[in-house]
Length: 298
Image (cartoon, rainbow, N blue to C red; front, side, top):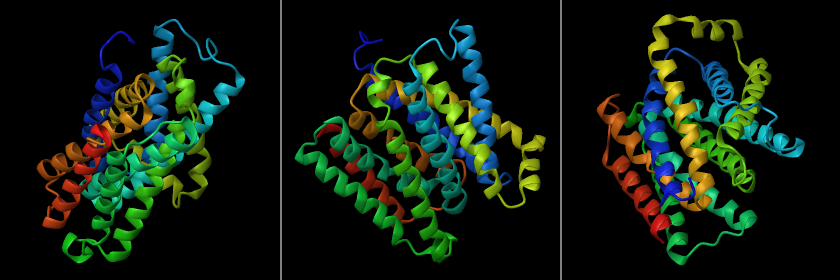
C-alpha cells in the first residue's frame, strides 16, 4: 500500500464520500431512533462485521500489538466512537444534515492543533489562515436566525456546542493513536476501537431516558432499510478508509481532505432531504470550503 502514489490522500477522500451518504441515512433513521440507541446499534453491527473480517483474513484479536497498545485503541474507541458519535447523532437530530456539515468543519482545526502539539507536525501561514476561515464559518452558522430555519435559538446553540464536542473528541481519539496506526493492521486497529466504542455505548445506556422504549425502536423493521446501509457505509467502509487515510499520510492533510464531507453532505441534504438553504448557509459553506482549501494546499 505504501507504494501506491497518494494512497493516504485517496483513502482520505473516499472516507467522506461514503460518510456523507451514511449521514443522510442516519438523519432519516434519527427521526425514529434516539441517538444513544442508534449509536449502540451501529457499533455492535459494525463490530460483528469487523470480527468477521478478521476471521476471514485468518487473524485474531491478539495477533498483533501489546497490552498497552490495545488499551490505547480501546480508549480511542471510547472517545471517538462511544462519545463522539453519540454527540454527532444528537447534533444531527437537532440541526439537520446541512448545518451539521458546516459545524463539522471545526474538525480540521482540532486535528491540526493536536498534531502540532503532540505529533510535531507544523503549519504554514496559509494553513493558519485556513483554520481561522473555518472557525469563522462555524461562527456564521451560529448567527443564522433559528426561526427562519425552523429551529429555536436554544436548539441551534445546543446543536453547535454538541457538534463541536463531537469533532473535538473525534480529533483527540485519532491523534492519540496516529503513531500506533503506522505499524498496525487496519482491520485489527478498527476492531479494538469498536470494542471500546461498543462498551462505552452500553455504559451510557443508564443516561438514556425511557431506555426500553428507545431500544424497542431498533426492532422496527421499517427503519432497517436505512439504518443497516447507513451503518455499513458509515461505520464499516468509511471507518476503514478514514483510518487508512490517517495511516498513510499526515494527520493534518488527511483531516483537511476528510472535510470534503462538508460539501457532499450539504448538497445531499438539499437534494435528498430537501433541507432549506439560505444565503447565510451558503456563505458558511463557502467559508468552510475555502478554509479547507487553504489548509490542504497551504
